[in-house]
Length: 116
Image (tube, rainbow, N blue to C red; front, side):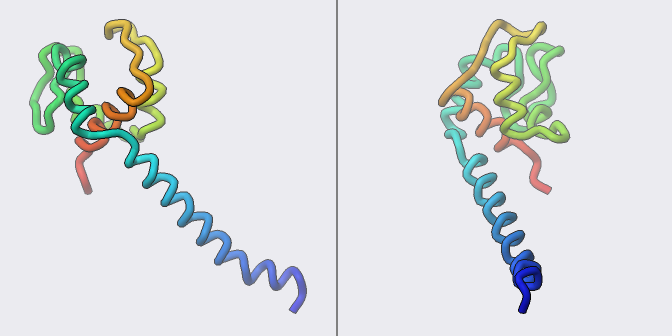
């Protein structure tokens, strides 16, 4: 067996392991944060403008999306929320959420995503 055929025969196994590894890394990232602590933070910090509970029809501030609507935004993921929370926004208080608070509120928001 030549070196190139050995490499070719190992390619599916290497790709499979890499894909599996990515899945494990993504699962670990999704598990960051405490959902209950995130909900408590959101209740204290965000609920005056945003509806934070699953199934809420509208936010107290009509310009603020519900957390469930945010969670179900196409393409939304943990990284997008990290960037969002570290960036000031024109229609929001000057609130930058970082560290464990960010991990927790991100875990809470992502827990509201509708399962398909």
